[in-house]
Every structure is written in structure tokens, then in C-alpha cells.
Image (tube, rainbow, N blue to C red; front, side, top):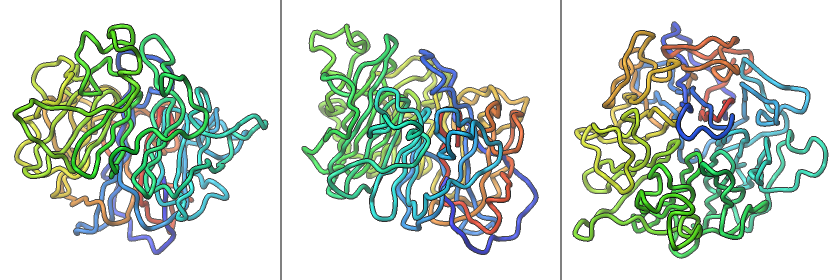
Length: 427
């Protein structure tokens, strides 16, 4: 969570909490994915400079420091080997001038103002992209070797990716499926950055738990990784498993074009990935196309079946959407008017709709935030809600929060929050 020093605006009464990023979804593979919390950021005045931060997000130009809280037993907090958990935001030492940060399942990846990529946390399957043979090196923020400056990063359970200034995509680590490790490519796990895609200039990347999506400058989508829940949008259900296709595992792991109906010409201008799903915004009308897991209507589709090819989600119609993010079973969406919407599974308070709410089958406004205009071009305070078992809400204890609540702490005093990102058990 990058923050910037400065005169903090006057605090209002606590009207919200940090949003839970969900993770109790089939197939359940590891503790890494178990994120049921969400994070929202907005300013303290009801004006257009208010903003909400939901993942994944585009890099900001304003550098800041990084605060972390939640579970840190494998170094994902970057606070050293002695710190196993923090229930309040803690400053990561020696990590200044950060412009982007992304929390993976049990690791964290940052970009500095110079374009350097820095990682820390669990290095199972090579998720850190660097050597960690030295004792304790997983707990320290250390840079990854790349051939050019990075402008965006993304992270899943066991993989990480970086979009370079020249439009190339490098990735490292591994994807996983119901059978275990898949590898990053057909050659297996990649412990160091590998050039994954350079055919067309990429303008944005997004990672789900075990898949990667790339948006090219000409508005096309390319995907790779696990496709069991339809999250690749290009692999039929019968061929979604690694042993289901005659083409072999390379068919899943090699980036390939997501195609719509031959008679339908669609150009996209933004893309987001959640746990086992993908959301893409059509350029001209702003329609949202979705594919992936929909067992709790997290795609906004009425039927609860997984979608293996792009399908327009009518429940997103009528608004222009600027951000979409989510976990395995729920989705958060920010519209162009600055309103936060949620849909999907209600458990653990992940929707922020209160303790007695039902699952949301369509985008539903979060009541405690509806009077605030949230945009992606300002700084402000941090709110969270959802499962608090590992302190990932920053509330000071492990209680679940069913509505948005203000995150407070000594390290937030005099600082404005620029970005928030939630991993499996840390923020």
C-alpha cells in the first residue's frame, strides 16, 4: 500500500472498512488464495478529488513509501524475518519512491520511480524472480533483473509479471491447476524473468490467481495460464484441463489471442483479472465482456455456470466502468461517477453490504460509500472490510468487518494513501 507524506485532510467519522478480496473458491489449492478482504481508498472531502483504489490498477506517477499489514510468516510484508504478523499498517524500511505495488498470494511486487522491480515474500515456484539462497533474503525487498524499465506489475498465487516501457511482457514463477504446478511455460517453472510476449506492444497486464491477461495497443486480448474455470476465454471446457487437449500443455501456457464470434468485431481499451475470471471493457460503447468462474454470479451473469468464451454482461450496462477487481467469489467495480459496486458471495462481509445481506447477483452500490465520489486521480484515506483473521484489514484485531471502516494507525498519520492492494493474507 504506497502512501505519500503530506498534510492529511481532516478525518470524518468512520463510515467504512477495507473491502475483502475473496478466496474460498473451487478448486481450493493453497493458503495463498485465501483472501476475503478488499481495500478502498478515498479522500476525506466529498469532491471530485476523492478516489477508491481497487486492484488491479494502473501505475501512479506520484512516488510514495509502502505500508503493510496482515500475515507475514513468509516475508510478504517485507518487515524482516522477526515479524510474523501486523494488525496495523507498518512502514516497510528502505523502500522509498514506489510508484506501483501488487500483492500476490504470499508475495509482494513493487515498482520504484526509476522503473526497477522489487519483490519479497514466498519464493515457492520462483514467484520472486530472483535468487533467495541467502538465508532471510525472501523477507527483504530486493530488485529483480530486467532489461528495461517497468511501468506495471501484476501477481498471482505463484507467478509475477512486469510490463516494460517498450511494451514487452516479462514473467516468472509458475501457474497452477487442480493437479498442482503447471510451470510458466512448457519448459516448466521459471525462476528468473522470461520474455513472455513481444509480438504486439502491450499496454496493460492483469493477473488472476493462476492466469495472465495482456491487452495490446490494437485492442486485442491475449491470455495464458490455467483455464479450468474458463478464465482464459479461448479454451473450450472439454480442453480446459492440461490433459484434455491433444495440443498439450503449451496450448494453455503460450499466450494466445482471445477470439469472439467471427462476425463480431470488438476492440477493448481496458482489462482486469480477478481470482478465476477476466473482465474487459469494449472501447466504443464501454460494454463489459466477461469469462471465467460465475458460481456466485461474480461475472454479473444470471446463470451460475463458468464461461469459457467472452460474453457481454448485461448487468454492467448503463454505466461507464473505470475499475473492476475481485477475488474468487466476489467482484468490486468502480464506475465513472465514482460509485463503488459489488457483486457475488456475501460470506465474511466481503461485499461490504452489512451482516444481514444476501449474495449480490448484479452490481450493487455499497451504501456507506454512495455519498462519496471516488475517482482514480487523487489521494486520501483507506477503508477496508471482510475477513480479518490474519489482520489483513488493518483494524488492529482479527474480527471480520461487514461494512467499510476507516483504517487508522500511526504510520498513516500525515500521509495520504495512493494505492491499496490485497493478497492472500496480507495488504
